[in-house]
Each structure stands twice: as structure tokens, then as C-alpha cells.
Length: 233
Image (cartoon, rainbow, N blue to C red; front, side, top):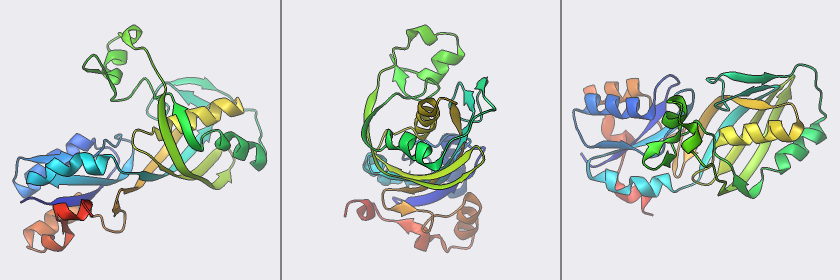
């Protein structure tokens, strides 16, 4: 089988967990994902099977979009809700205009500082592994250029801001949350993340792991599989 299947990753699983599950369900060894989704995040995770793994980089390089929730007033070491709380601030209030102004700093071409707890590598070691093993002093964090094509606030409720973002490869939505909190002066972290698209793959053309097994068992999986040519157009 040399195909691509768009899996909707649930929370609580790593991207590697999804790859392992697909290997088991389809009884095939050559399987790879196209861009890591954190365990706490859910959504679109295209999986390449067989010779389709050769085009995984093409999918990885495409724009991605997300719906995210930013919680203001709580800063964590991982920039998301899985981390240790570093600072908490309860008494603050902002107008919608002030929040929009803070979001303006994250729009367009920006230089973004990635989180220390990330899969980026330093001398062949993942930064998150270096931090957890007490070797954070080996990391020299540098900003990276990213492009935020769209950044729209969907709702503001108490200290929770829901927003939509469409961005280039390499963007950390966690860093957007951290940086907006920093600009506002109250801190903040990412409390929810759903990837809604990765290149041509989106929530509408995705299936769950449970559906993958069901369709594979009853021989109806073909209509949910994409040819390599699908990402070459």
C-alpha cells in the first residue's frame, strides 16, 4: 500500500503513538507522520504509508491552521497546560482593543522564539529531553522566522481567548500564546489546540483511528486513502 490517510489525532496520544496504531491496523511497517502534534493537541495528522513516505516532507512544508484557546494569567514552563505553573496572576482586565493590539504583534512575518520544551534538536538531542535531564544550559535559544498568515480572535470570555491561526511550517502556537500573555503583562499559556488543516488535508476529509480499523476490516477503506499525486498537484 502506497497511500496517505488523514487521521484525526485524539488528545493523549503522541504522533508516534498514531503511527504505531496505523502500523498495527494496516499490518504494514513503512508508516510515517507529517508533522508532530503534541499529546495534548488533537486534529489533522496526515499519515504516509509505503512509498508515500517519500512525500511526507512536502506535506510537512505546507501551511497549517489551528483553533486554539489562550488562558491568560497563568504561565507554564512548557507554554501549555501540561507544564509546571511558573506564575499566576488573578487581578487583571483588558479591553478588546488592548487584546487585539497584543495579537497584532503576532501577525505577518515575525521572529518567534520556540519553547524550550519542544522537539527541536540541539547537537542531535531534542531540547525537551535536554531540559528534563537538567542540561538546559546546553541550549542557546534563537528566534526563527515564521509567517502568521491569519490570526483571528473568535471569542473572549473571562481570561479565555479562543482564536484561529493559519501559519507557516515551524510555527509554535504555544509561543503565540506565551508572547501575547507577555505583551499584555499578565502571562498566558495554551490550554487547548485543534489542528484544523495541514496542506490539503482538513477535518472534513479525515477519519479517526477507530474508523480506520472499521473501514479496513470491512474493505471500505479505499475511498479514505489518497494517492501520492494528491499532494503533488
